[in-house]
Length: 225
Ligand code: CO
Image 1 (tube, rainbow, N blue to C red):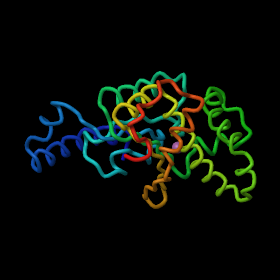
Image 2: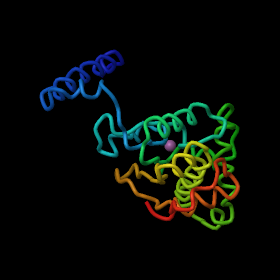
Image 3: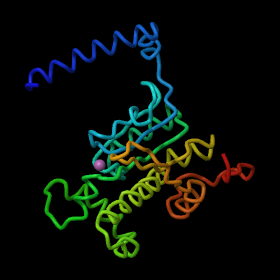
């Protein structure tokens, strides 16, 4: 297929999709246009092979999405922080998910001694994760295995970064939502795995240092949902 045919095919595909959707559920687009109540905020990698709603097998309207290279939550990134703020405070999502993926080019690049120009600063966040877990990672001899482990550890660190925000702490203490989850997606199998990020445990741990809101009421049991 030529470039212009590929380009045109997008719009033809879109029209076909609309037709099928309207045939299945005549009010589909009207309902969606009225409002959104997503249960999930998905923070994932920009990688073209990790489309949030497709891998979660959910319909439009179910997941609010933020994606960047290597699914990082940076404290000075207004884009990521605004997305988290809006999703948690206004849309009141129940779940915030950080989803990494095996085979992540960002993770791979951060493990190589190369000057990548503008990307250096972004990938520094991943090198910082490596430094925090250097002993564990250096002990893994196989490069592919070490990379896979860094993908997982990066997800856990980014979950902690989500907890470090005032909006997440304040909402959780007020309404016991959202919960923060760490997932990993395997490109080669299509399977999503829950990394069992210990949210309750990490919430209090992170708040030992990054506490931005008052202590919870005594009658609020944080240990269960
Ligand atoms: Co990636």
